[in-house]
Length: 348
Ligand SMILES: NC(=O)c1ccc[n+]([C@@H]2O[C@H](COP(=O)([O-])OP(=O)(O)OC[C@H]3O[C@@H](n4cnc5c(N)ncnc54)[C@H](O)[C@@H]3O)[C@@H](O)[C@H]2O)c1
Image (cartoon, rainbow, N blue to C red):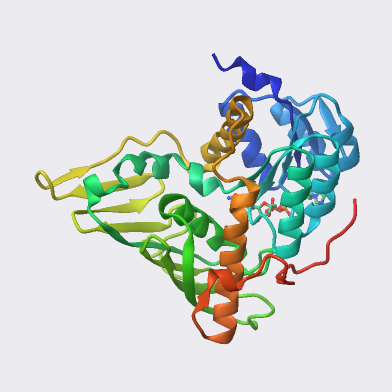
């Protein structure tokens, strides 16, 4: 039944989090045709572990490989634009790790170049494919929960030294993407952020954001990577605490332990069956969704064009934190020079 998935040769670039991609793809029996990394030792060790025949150190060689139909980008956001341009012009579909971009204009250009070359561009918002979160989706409606008016996600831990330097695009992008999938577009945001031992421009490590969706859900996102909490008092990724509240019921828990509390027709607690973990299963589920969307000629649910709203929301959060005011998401124009990249874009 699923042999058609083998027809989509995957070319993976970047073997950091890319290791989790490979584990997820192995669970789904997908066809990784080649891998690419600048680090030759890592490349050789990974090829051996996963039984991958072809390895490249040059992305241009990977793009030129005729067996590859999907380029899977797991390199940092500020390195992506020239790769996306070249891959799209070569007729390859793309999967880009989150955050799609830390630069608004580059995000738009990546979407446009893929549209112009009629290739698909999906963003790897893997929070949207976590088995536990997918398992509660049948209950995310008025029939079960009544009017859903509040949702919160809390994530913390001690992790100051991350390449993106800004926790809003690096981590909160997962939570923004998930709420967007569940409740639709955002209208506005008020956000506070702190760099712990550095300035906001050098990079926030904690942020608290109150957002309102266009559908009227009030959302509280809190992410603190400068938190030295004792065991039992943390909500570390990938076990961040999630709460969803409606007039008739609520859902709470974390990625692999979620409870649905209903009040009608009688009080009951439901524990949806959860088939897998965030790492690595969500990564496999993402690629399966992309391949199945290509096969059916449908847009993936986290396609690049729709993800521009996520990127706008991330910049609105930062803008609010910087200036201490409520920011409407549509204030963030697609053609403005918003940029949080800690390094300039490099060529191929
Ligand atoms: N849950 C998740 O979805 C998740 C988790 C971690 C990271 N990420 C995202 O994945 C992306 C990569 O992060 P990471 O933590 O894996 O980074 P990393 O630095 O650990 O790994 C990146 C890899 O890419 C390789 N690389 C860099 N430039 C290259 C080039 N030009 N050609 C070939 N290989 C190249 C590096 O050698 C390195 O092995 C980021 O956008 C990050 O936010 C997502």
